[in-house]
Length: 357
Ligand SMILES: [Zn+2]
Ligand SMILES: [Zn+2]
Image (cartoon, rainbow, N blue to C red):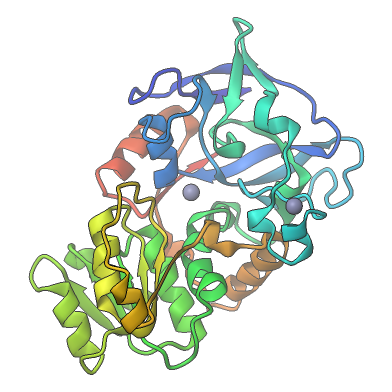
């Protein structure tokens, strides 16, 4: 099969032929239909997150079941599926209490590879999916069957970008109707936080970004107010829009610590700030802020998503016209041009660039 391999951090991926094994017990082999370039892929390709080389990146994907391993019951050959990095065992205490994104199980695929190059070198499954390839072998819990009439390029977005933003609002923070929400950074993930806030019934929904075209897009996704953080002090602006108190919830989708700091300053007493973007620097903050104002600071991993429950709901919302997906796709590329797709995401030109097979 053809795949895009990361052999060296911060270098273009090498598109070449790999061999891929049959799925083992509990695993499925998926023929890729579409995979988007997510910022987390770029973090891994650049070496920001460490990890072993070489590997195939990619994790925001959709495809068709090509082959099933022993004991697979949830899908059958030919099924269209969304394919995500979230794996769950169904029996650990987290899974049994409805929190599969916290699953603590270990998997053969954590350490074993099902792919090798023509020189016999094992190639790792980057971000647990390795979807920058014509086929992928994953655990059966990583796939969710979707309706045959769901467009596969848009379905791919449900595997990460959409659930990360939408789920942070709906699942993690459980935003209440009539509460105020601010979203810092309205790229691919931030726009989904905005549409999650709209569906949750929040008001006002304030989008904060440095680029006017992104703020314009945020309005079409449900933002009721926008703040250009380059032109005005965003903390003061958010307070002005929320009767001087600050927002009930802040979602920080920008992966920098200073934005998390801003998110904390923008919330009201008993407000909640949710870290969504991959900020990795230390955060300085005074404990008194959490005592006096009873503020809460938390993170959200993959939108606290329960794939088997949430993906079909999101498909339903899309098909009912209540969830925007078409507007998130900036461009489509073949796998041979994946490095162009990645470069354009790095430059901030794209919401989502999708590789179509
Ligand atoms: Zn992602
Ligand atoms: Zn589990």
